[in-house]
Image (cartoon, rainbow, N blue to C red; front, side, top):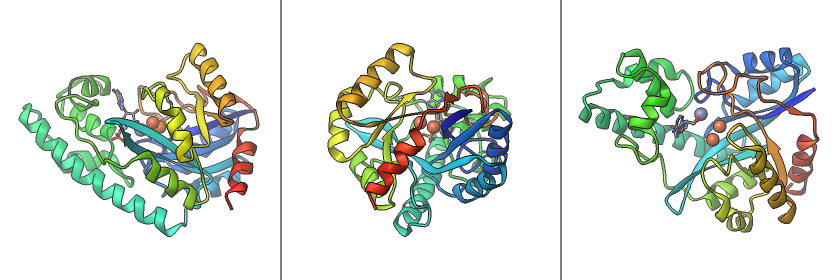
Length: 274
Ligand code: AMP
Ligand code: ZN
Ligand code: FE
Ligand code: FE
């Protein structure tokens, strides 16, 4: 029995549909998972239906981007009501913001002599909002670079010449949005975004959990975050951050956690919020 509370699908920059994700998870022995697309909830319904079919517990979720003190952070929203009108409106706005940011990034890439079109990106972006991995794929397909890692290191990564921010939305806005949609806000991969010093402030804003087990955090860091979780009475979560079969990320089943009752804890927290 395994659990994985951080998975992307074709509704953002993953490569599998929610149905395929759940089917694959079942095959790999995962019986509890969360669909957490970037700024997107469009895949949740399909995931829940597939969960019923395959006997996998599917948690509705999303991974929202925010900015705090000039730094990007990601906030997972678990058990959000994916029919909440405010959430639906927010997601639509973010999709627009991702599109206009893509156009700006394409202009910046052209300044570097890397010519791709919006159609080149959209071709591999599918139904969800456009993310930087889709832009990286367009650059690879055009033969400008060899892999996504190079694309991020040279051009697309935070602080690199073709980086453009999606938004300047603060974590307090995202946390409120998640709570209004009856969800539980959890700080994703704090070590990856160097968020440690801000955890007390984020808890003040209403953050209720920290992602402890994630491929970017070592055993030592896991220990440190477990102490933080205890200190602030938070929920510890974890997941693979799988993007389906996209290279550079764990495949589904490669980073699953032993079945500990994170889902139960999140559900209890959600019910306090109703
Ligand atoms: P976006 O939503 O457009 O900001 O893109 C976020 C995605 O880009 C996430 O899935 C990250 O895994 C990926 N990403 C961010 N920074 C890097 C990096 N330096 N190298 C590789 N992938 C990255
Ligand atoms: Zn992603
Ligand atoms: Fe993330
Ligand atoms: Fe993620």
